Image (cartoon, rainbow, N blue to C red):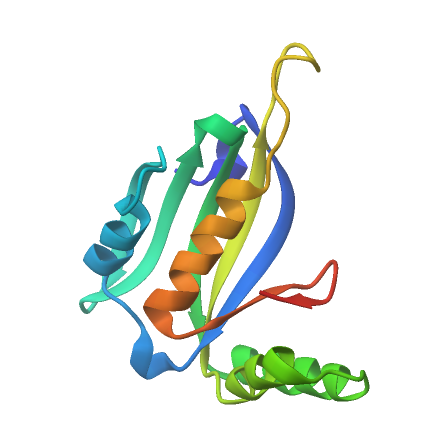
Length: 157
């Protein structure tokens, strides 16, 4: 079940991880990398097609958040990559950000990371902490040899 259908969560943002389709992992690889380390993530609804990762839900109770992660391939990705690269080329980027942009330019697939906040009865009870989100994106970047993108802040991760 998607978190969009879970009344305990409200949608916050969408982040992306761009990568070459040849680096698309299996669902088992995604599960293994997300379970690695000491983080307390709850994984559910893992899906794959033809042995390749399709989707998963990640709940991160310690930071009051959760994520639905899905894969997208094809023309939609290439169109977004072209727009993104064009947009970033109009900015003055150098060093590691330039290297990340060149990696995005080769991308033929992406992971959509839909970020959700767990609703609380009391505003003092829980505060959304993006730490879990950025940890997940970092792990997915490493797994897919990809580059994360926060479209809200126009940041390459």
